[in-house]
Image (cartoon, rainbow, N blue to C red; front, side, top):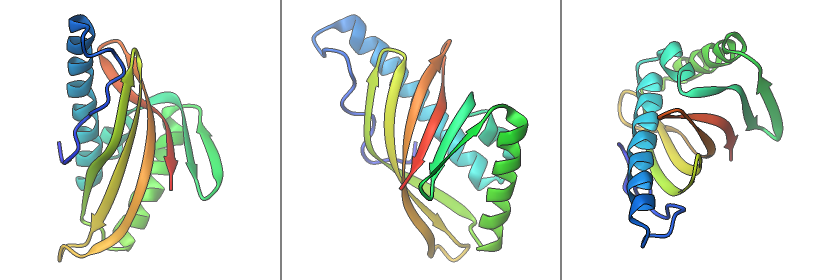
Length: 147
């Protein structure tokens, strides 16, 4: 995972060994989720990005909330986003975990993103807050709030 901060601050009491193991598993699964999400952006892979979401999904940006009821609606949005990133010359996206908190089957994660061009120069730098839910053994994004 491309982070420096890890998933510190898990929600269970650290003296509870069962909770520590559960949080450790959650942290690994969440790290894999964000690795897949990042790879989807780096590969311009709409399906890989879409697979990271729960349905319905909510994305807040530019002071507006958008509810995506199904994958078709989300795919349309992701395709438009990837076209805009391509137009701006973004070739690589990287993140740093700013904060995280896991509690039961919910997690809150804040990532600081840098999107660079092929020369390694930043094109966009921004922060996103993610609300995650556990779906079986998988973790998925339920809501994103872009700063």
